[in-house]
Length: 205
Image 1 (cartoon, one colour):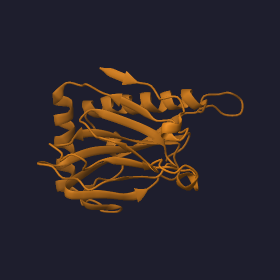
Image 2 (tube, helix red, strand yellow):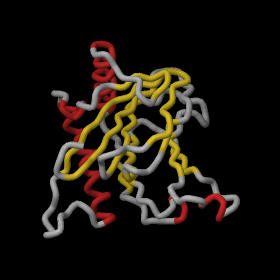
Image 3 (cartoon, one colour):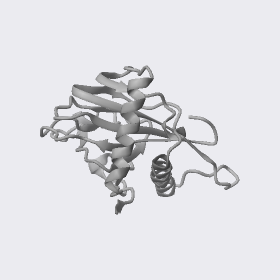
Image 4 (cartoon, helix red, strand yellow):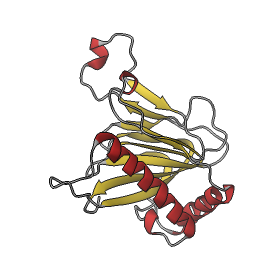
């Protein structure tokens, strides 16, 4: 298992913390997550808010009763704690550690599926875990973040206002919930399955 802690703030990511971790679980873990998610989208009406050619589950994934969900909770908690440590967050004015509260939902993308530009409200950290990506056509199904600095592109000619990450099975990413991002149209030979999450402090997110 390979873990990369949040990168130090840098110009490459606009001074914004980003956590990436290449999780290398037993292949049966991702296959089980895939089966659970597909069964849920078949049996429970799904949402299409914010997405095109994709299905979203309800945001109760972390409450599903299955051992692999416990592993997923652990990976998300590790990411949130690393982000807290990196920026000095997670404690109240008295220095007491604040409890973390998380929610997660799954998205199943079909060919041409995308997620529109958005950010996540009422959370400290957001992120995604890639369960399955199929054999993606190069340059499709990418996660792109938008430079949050107003006017930065005008002040820095030639610098891209986007930061792009290529999905891979087992990749977990976390970032500040306010950071705008989107998923470019996906092309591949199978469903692209991801689990998105929010983490907040001391109350439901």
